[in-house]
Image (tube, rainbow, N blue to C red; front, side, top):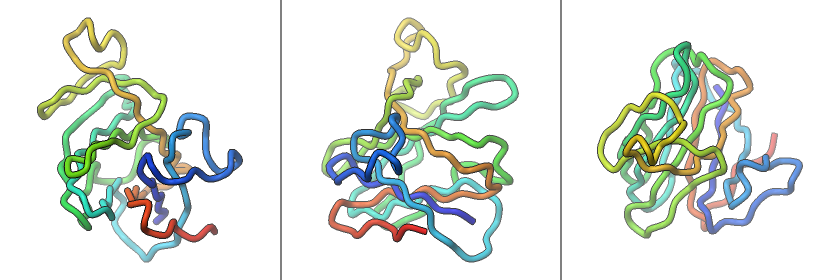
Length: 159
């Protein structure tokens, strides 16, 4: 299983060779080796804050955004069960405790309450909010974990 670490907006960014343009703004990515696990897309909140997670991805019918998963501090949650069907997933996270967000440049639709939204076009005209999601490249792995971290925590070691 592979793991990705995303450091919140106030953390320092990695060099341009390790950080995609869509993630400029403080999202830190690092691969980690992990033990055997089920094939799922998981999110771990390694921060001291309660966070809300929205997820975007492409399925056979097109773009979908879903939310909200509420993650307590130091908790993990399975966002999608089973082998991953796409290489790229998109995340928007909100820090409920301290304010702020983990975001990126991929604009997708959200709303304040629980949602599943088809399509990423005309969010505002359709009555939704529009937020920037950061891209997660799973490298076509069948299982992946995304980690949100505080800037005070050391980033994951590089492979």
